[in-house]
Length: 200
Image 1 (cartoon, one colour):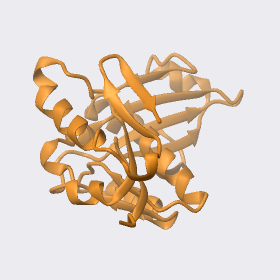
Image 2 (image 1 turned 135 degrees about the horizontal axis):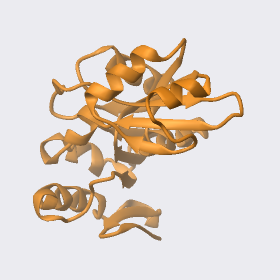
Image 3 (image 1 turned 45 degrees about the vertical axis):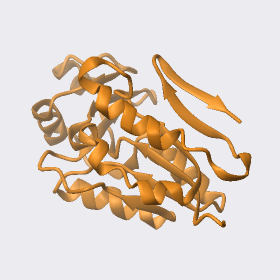
C-alpha cells in the first residue's frame, strides 16, 4: 500500500527568535556567551522584552529536520504541541509554508508556545535561551496513530523521551508508534535510554 508520507517527526514545536545584541545585554541577564540554557516562562518573557528587532521562525530539532526533508521534495508530517498565542501562529505558518503537514495534537495548550531566544553578539556568537513551554506537554493523547501508520518512516527528538518513572507512560506511547515497522525497509529512528538509535 502506498503511504501518504515519506517521514513523520515528533518533537518540540519551538519558535526561534533571533536578534543581534551587544554584550552588555548578556551581562545584564548573567548569560554566558555561546551557550544554551533552559529558562522559565517568566525569564523568557523578561528577556524577550529586552531584545531588539528580531527574526521569528519555526524551529526545534525535529521540526527543522522535517523542513529540510520537505525542501528536498519529501512528503513530511510533524507532530508537536503549541500554545494559544502569536508564536503558535508563527510556528504553524512557517512550517506549513515549506511543505510540512503540521499536527498540534489533541488540543491547544494554555501555556505559551515554546521559544528559543537567540542573542547574536557582534562577533557572531549565539547565546540561546530556551523555554519549552507547551512543547513539553506533548503526550500519548496527542499522538495521531492513523497518520503515523500512513508514513513510511518516523523519528523523534525530545529531551524527555526517556523511561524515567514520571515519564514512563509517555515514553512507551512514543515507542509504540516509532517502532511500528515502516514499509520498504526505509530507515527509522526509535528512542532508547540515553539517546537515539538508528536502524535500517
